[in-house]
Amino acid sequence: MSVSPDELKVRIESAIPGTRAAVSGDGHHFEAIVEGPAFAGLSRIDQHKLVYDVFGAELGDRIHALSLKITATEDR
Image (cartoon, rainbow, N blue to C red; front, side, top):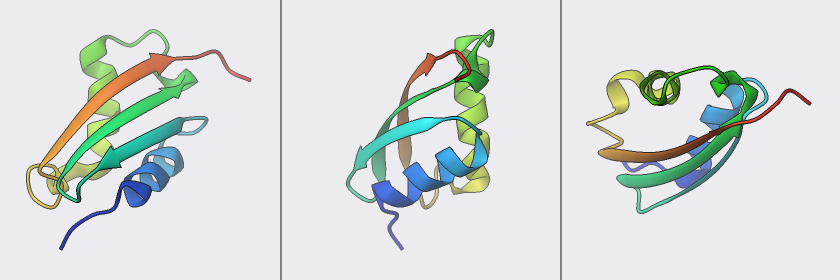
């Protein structure tokens, strides 16, 4: 059962308030550009963990790979 980039986008934006995401991929391997205030003050590892936690056990299973580029923004 493959996953769509739109599904990942919606799930990221719903789970992390104030976040915007652009996701591309082939149903198993994805790239996401994510920005939002929730990432401010976090290390790169913690930023990635925040997004990976949205998907839990699906990473490595339904979602084979997820590459992230994260930018912290100010609250609007």
